Length: 164
Image 1 (cartoon, rainbow, N blue to C red):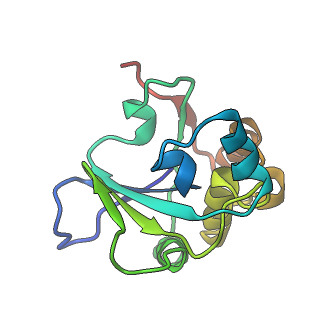
Image 2: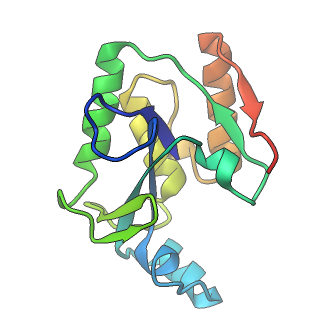
């Protein structure tokens, strides 16, 4: 998930919005059987972009540790490039599903092994100028490794998410 401060004048309550990407059938339809793993990775299938609005990042809300939080300071130009990139991943302006504080939009690109959630995040962060490669973001661990390096280069720090 990529968390951004809310834009001034935003309608919903919450200090941040988070953007993430998933395979629609797996995430929204609960089709998480073994065949779902193969479908999600090997067969291009519908993707969804989740936009969560709230006050706590996913790493603080998830019961699935370990989760790390990486904080980067962006220039205004980098921030706007990131925002434009994220918006460009939406296939429609209106969400197809709303669940709690999350809105789910159809994604422009299909979900598969070479375009999954870690690569989605890496592409967006690269658009903001971070030294990350989607080609090397095949797992949480490989993306986190790149983000730790980017944090060192930027003088930022990675930190574990607070416990539940």
